[in-house]
Length: 247
Ligand code: F6R
Image (cartoon, rainbow, N blue to C red; front, side):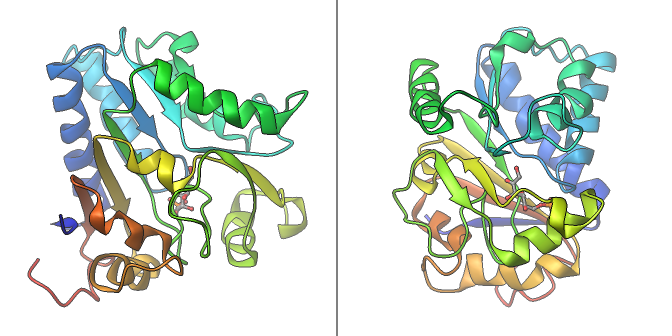
């Protein structure tokens, strides 16, 4: 199935559309399994889900979640860890049970073994119903940088120079950005029954075009979603600006 593309006028509309798709899955299957991403792009979606939880009674009490990735060496209480991000931006604002939320462990006796266990947890939960993704300027999904294997699983990965630079905006300097992360693999992500990828802003336009209209290649990890049976990109007008196909 080719990737479906929904173009929203701006980041706010993108976030509302994404939250509506997630809410539909939760309403149909209250005990569903959701996959989440961190970064700037999904923040508005999480805010909207928190609003729906508070004002519309959308309950996450029976939902289980898995996050894509975590920096190696950052503990969950580090303010740049992805566990911290999820707790602050979403989990503390909704009625989810924290013990049903999984983020790879950045600090563990053996983080490599933790990656294998993470795959087992996902399987034991029955697989992911919907995985929400962002996209890197270089086309990465989670921390699967260009060159990642299409059948890769959760593992320790080295971050690209461009990703370290892009993420240095959250740290005091690029030197402080961890060089390694734990990341769900492309094979892990593609087992999700439904995938929704968000992109906003002009910096993402090239990556979105390569992913949707370019060849399927490990040079653009998001292009590997082209043969997934149910993937939708929800992008704002700026991120869609280089697409040539029907929008
Ligand atoms: C983080 C993740 C990354 C980001 C990507 C875009 O969990 O999966 O692939 O989605 O780096 O980040 P933002 O949204 O900050 O541009």
